[in-house]
Image (cartoon, rainbow, N blue to C red):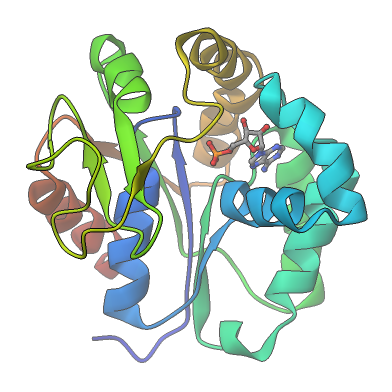
Length: 220
Ligand code: AMP
């Protein structure tokens, strides 16, 4: 669809659907979807040194220390498959990380194409998280309230077991929203100042939101 390099950051509250949109965009553009939450969860389940430090923060809905995430991101962005671009989802999450990203981009001689901020009414965010389920086998995503599978425990596509993230409980969700408001929301201003921010209305269907996402990427 495009010959140019595309470096996109997705911003948005937990449950805004940025992971879903990042997945679709990555597939469409054939560039990697770099998602710090998934990378950290993998480190936790592999029991790596980083994973051991990260797990306590994640269970509390707090941000993992910046030196860990910036290190993980730098290592990932130096891999050759990012040559034609990449999509960042869940990073940066505060100003320190955004400045860390600026330094990495300078080092690898790339620039951000745009920062897409997915805006969703707060009233539906909690339900998006606490009813979220993922197939352990094929990764298909469901929501028991908004996009339920035929059987609450099994994937419609492959029959795999549907699992819930350990941090998608009501208490943790509240803490993650607070962390988002206090630490991540100021990045909207940060990227407005760099003339990179595009707001996307995330209150629509996945397909309609993706149309907006694609238009924003093509326009930049
Ligand atoms: P997510 O999958 O994006 O909802 O992230 C799950 C958890 O991983 C967050 O609540 C944080 O504890 C941690 N995490 C993910 N990305 C970052 C990041 N960029 N900086 C610090 N912590 C992060």
